[in-house]
Length: 77
Image (tube, rainbow, N blue to C red; front, side, top):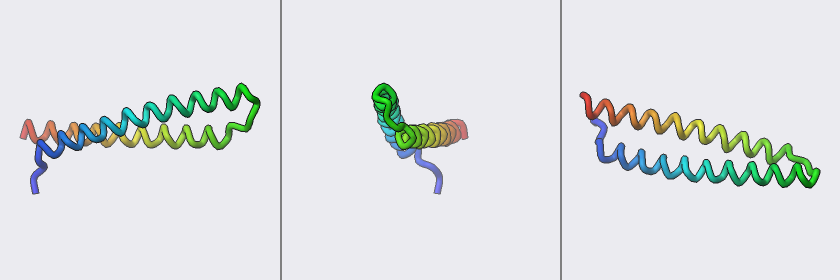
């Protein structure tokens, strides 16, 4: 079944929302880490969570590029 351009655009919009949410989560986690450090508390779990968020964001961005590539293929044959 051939990819549907409209469906790919919907997927792109969806992944863009997820990316925006992930970027907010990362900013919040960085602020949390700063507070933990300022208070002299253990940051290991918060740092691992931040790394996990960052890995997820990289995956989402790669997925976004795949969707854009599919749209380009649809548009250019």
